[in-house]
Image (tube, rainbow, N blue to C red; front, side, top):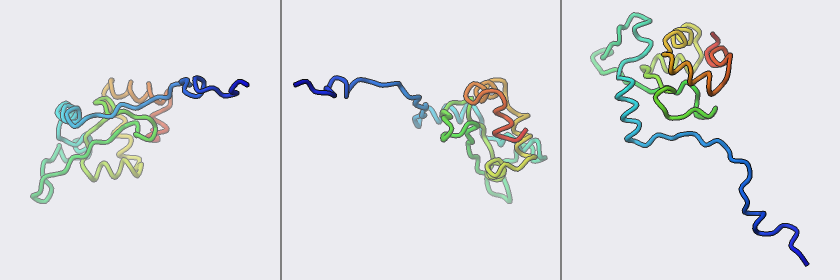
Length: 128
């Protein structure tokens, strides 16, 4: 009697799924060094890349343009530096900040977003 579902068939690889790139701590340091420590949107809204707020250093957070949930990778072209206030505004999809971020994208960042999500990605991400 033959096994209807042999072990060789059970272990055979099926269709490979996409696996996103996750940066190591060393790679994150390289991304941070490349992107800088100034908020991308502060200049747009008059802060001119302020380093302090009420005498305390402004904390920079690194925002994924294509979120990890949508398959975004931990690569420099997918990450932009934002201060905490701007990051919250982008996360809440506030129109002025989203439009400013979309205008500020470099060619490489724009290409990454379009490559991952296709045409019309900026409209879906930022409502632009």
